[in-house]
Image (tube, rainbow, N blue to C red; front, side, top):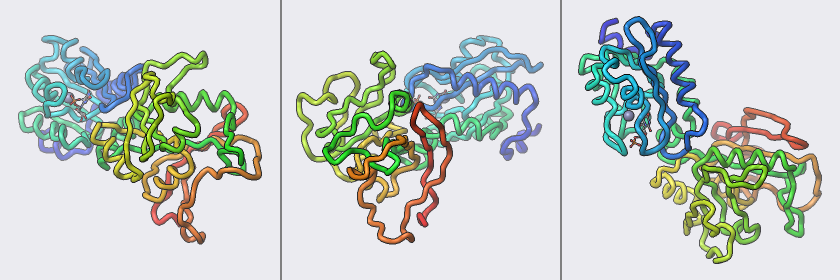
Length: 354
Ligand code: AOF
Ligand code: ZN
């Protein structure tokens, strides 16, 4: 394949061996136990001229070697003349670690096949640099799968703010608390365990000072036995009221970040600056309404308990909608039974919401 064609290619020119290696690289990228955080999940497989695997590598979290460097280290001198199959366009920047383009060139890699183009403006441009240095480059191979693997990360880099998932646990009639304020437990143990698993996939869990004061939640990720999980998202409380010294959120079980603002955009900007890619909104109806009004909810995970209260707090506060023309519509992406409850996963519909 000519270099010009490769540079222009969105993909489709990978060999069968490279395609198989890309599937393996995707599996490596998804290795369980890799901590979430500012960095993407990335896998890399090095192939020799006959299409045989020389070495593999995957990224293990911010500050550790990139997938390409792991694979190159494992290959040693055997990397010379090889093809690097990698799920993300190799970076050309020095961040927490050095540029992968330099590492690939230094090792004498002859060809690079990658899946997703790097949406990170700081790191992007690796493909062009490699092609300019005489390496054959093919991009876009299984790009959709690779992007899906880092959906929140990709969103955060493209939009310059974290991806926001709003979680609700409500009765069938949309109540999140009875009139006396009690809300434990609307959903069953299985749904609550599912929430802990969901928390384990995000970088930050966000509530308002109202929820922090009334519910005194801990917002940690705990197993069925109550034990704390290894990855704890940062607990973020936004609002102007002070958090009492004795609040559970101050117990040190997970990081705590106080954001003295009522403005969702300001809160997300502060979190984006700290490289938070995925926020789980777990606040009450007022906070949810503020985010929805601002168009800052991207996905909803809604647990419906087969129960009726007839009165009490509605799941979402005033959205300023007074006619059906202003309704916020969602697109359902999943419906699952979780124990006695039902979990509906949805994305926000296209604007305008009608
Ligand atoms: C990764 N792992 O395997 C690859 C990445 O400053 P750093 O070192 O943390 O660089 C992070 C950026 O490097 C990341 O946003 C992405 O654009 C690029 N490639 N990152 O964490 C990897 N290949
Ligand atoms: Zn890199």
